[in-house]
Image (cartoon, rainbow, N blue to C red):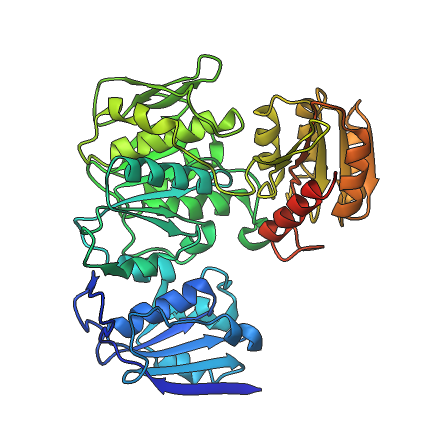
Amino acid sequence: MLKASSLKVSSKLVNSHTKIQSFYPEQDLKGQKVAIIGLGKSGSAATKLALARGASVIAIDQNENSGSTFNINNGFLDLKNADLKTFFGNFDDKILKEADIVVVSPGIPLEKYGIQSMICSGKEVLSELDFAAQVIPSCTKVLAVTGTNGKSTVTTFAGQILNHLGFETFVGGNLGVPLSEAGFHSSNRRPLEVAVVEVSSYQLEIPPKYFCPSVAVILNLTPDHLERHQTMKNYAAIKCRIFSHMRGNKIGILPLGNPYLDEAVMDHADGVSLAWIGGSPGVNVDVEAKIAELKLPTIGCVSQLQLSELKAVGKHNYTNAAVAALSVLGLDVEIKAEAFSSTISKLTTLPHRMQVVHVDDDGIVWVDDSKATNVEATYFGLIGFELKSVVLLGGVAKEVKMKGSNGFEQLVEPLRHHQGVITFGFSGKMIQKTLCANGLTIPCLNAETLKDAVSLARSIAQRGDAIVLSPGCASFDEFRNFEHRGRIFQEFAISSE
């Protein structure tokens, strides 16, 4: 059933207290029709930006319930005088054919809405990321971070380093605030100097035309999202599109020795100065000494970074902090390497990432790592955590597409020093079977739900142990998302006494 609404929205700014410094030429899309597909956070932000640029906007989402989350009232747009039509549910395909520009939200597969056909026909089809990149001025440095795991943490660390050193910084993208929101910048603040942008593979499925970082990082690449990308070769090629328009002294940072990325980067990083995580030039971390060596490909000297004051839980965060520092150093914004030392103690991780959420009266430490939605994230969390733990694994296991493997066998080694494992949820029994078949020697029990798993873990854990939720799975069997799962775990932790 077709649901449509139409209103006039002013592209002028009317907030009486704050004028907005916009990055785009005023009304640069006047007279053009822009279609926005997918009306979640990214689609709402792209709609606001298109209206502010003077476009006539058609906002579309086949989910009839999306109207409850679609929000373009940011206090900067007077919703009276410019064109906006919204369609929730079914719509006439002719609407998209008539659009001059089609902007696609990252949650929308290219097979839907005829997007792939439009791309092949030559129509201007952009991701929300690329649409936003059109209006970011050349004076704003862009630091882009992608990878299967750790990208939110490195993005956050880089943003915190820049903020602590006094730079006007936007932090967002796939992480929380869509890049389109950077198009609205308050004039009572300094001009935006750096945008630190987390980028997902979904945001790179439509080959970018305008997104051109000064520094781009691919942290790692392990099996994930293969239900959408099909093969690791495709997954790597999509990730490497982040380098497509970088030239000259722009810096690309990759993990050393990943065969999929080594092949894909040859097609996408011609002319980029490359650095390596675990190689030289690049970043090398001595976890025991808590020291990192940083070397940019554009500068010959090696700098040392002391990491001993890092408070974030897990040894893997030493590498995350060092990569963030190298990335910021690569922006060439006149920061001396010695300045980073003063920021390390101030770095904090986001919620649900090896987050200590409670220490109960029996001295048991409760750790929420709900963001570990694939096996590799759980692996790195476990090898970097020193407390003996009861580990909770479960949910909906990701598709791995490796013959004879679901990936969980690689957890046997890091688990063997711990107290026990509780599997739960849709894939719980499969995980339990895999671990036991591959030589796990510590107790491994199965529970139906996360609540049941927590109860079992509480009965096994001893004073001084930790109970760690690091599921290695998606959350959709019981929960809305990993954040919801983490919040429920935290409630269980606090009510356990």
